[in-house]
Image (tube, rainbow, N blue to C red):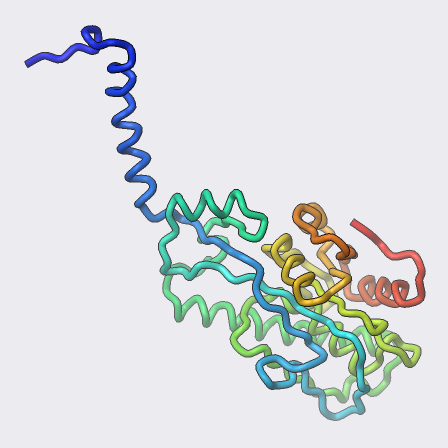
Length: 269
């Protein structure tokens, strides 16, 4: 039996042609997609405690009592083995508190949960080592002679990845030397932010900055330190009342915080 679209009315022909498209959309709506959906995560004050334990434990040298907070920020994403479907992706695209990201950018090691956790914790351990080296080198350059005697341990529980590096360095500096003039590096403010750090003190970019600004604001921060290369991302969904300060090096970050405390000129995005 033959079939011809020419014998159908225009509405009938459109309906017939639409059927395969509808079927494809239905299949796409049910099929898992190679994306992860992220949202603002928790923050942790590196000058205080996380999950009941001090984030920074420094021995071998005197430490100072600090005021204010230095909050490293996180995002949380759908797990590596969790299916993300078309509806989740569309929902994420139209919400400011969600972000749709390629799964392999969030989980570059694959879908194995244990391997992902081990990879992220490995990145965190390296970040802690580099943060300590950068902070102690900065302090020695500032004339803090006994900085080399400091023994530093960092504990952020199961938080993984390298993006806490800058804030671990700042926490060490604040606990040992403050602003260098007897006061707090924070100036008593609630300061949040993100950024990797190298042992030589260079600040690097991270992911999910737009979501991290929301986490910072939610937890009371008024200032957000952001890798300079990600200013545009940070501005995209910046909460009202949150001040962005772009940074590229540990020294530059310390200088900016000192200027902020004194009411001097501070870089802006």
